[in-house]
Image (cartoon, rainbow, N blue to C red; front, side):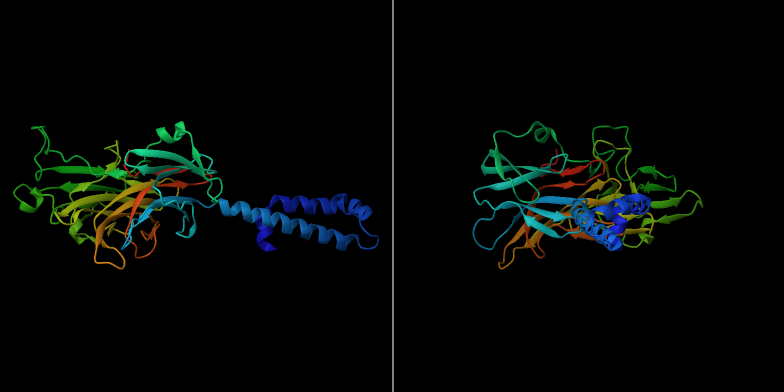
Length: 367
């Protein structure tokens, strides 16, 4: 009963007060004579068990949940996108839709977390709007999409910046001749992104770029060059939050991160890394690209992760895939998809009870 006592807290204290301040005498009149104390204990125990049951039920929904629209590629036949509900720890709770007449896309939790609205594409450029409860009940077609659903955009995420000197501004430093400096939000370190004129590797967007970049400790004044940091494979640009070029870090205790991107080649495209400023290491987020979505107050983040040429099970075919993943404070990830699958994520939504914002939304088309 210890855990129930902990969850009930003040309720148990009030019961104890009642027992010692006359409640026992009152209960004596309502119970067989000669056994008031035992009956009181039995009543308290029954109350505790019932309250514990409701506390467990409420506590279960207090966990964050994620709904993902996934299309699993098959060796034969046509595959469709359906909705799957996960707990934040990666546990699959249930499949919410199974209709094979179209693709279920861009699910979004309502602000209270009680319903999920989604789009069903039944033909090219022909859409329906549906609603379903997280428990799987209440699946119904809507006459039109709700206003809040139509106006919701993707939550804040990190993007590749426009490279200075690559546009029409002739006064901007040429790519390969720049030095950019960015201080961390807590003023603990400064990133010095230095390029050396005449260094061929610094003049192109490729894996050899960034060897002159460094992390400078603003307290001690000591610097560490990027190539000496474990996990470094190249860096070209520091990512920033979409629409906020000045916001180049993700600091959400214990996370202290900066994100960097680099072009690999024409086959693999781009990739990106998280620079962990606490453990001073680079962690590659994907063989190809991954767009980071902050989870404020969670000390974690989501990524829409892209993988090229993924083998389709039981076939010799491959597909370009995308998956939703969650990264914790130690930069360990959870993938919200079947293990070993080739799949495409067509949007996702996360409901976070008691946190702000309550929902994190990832649209398949960005904005």
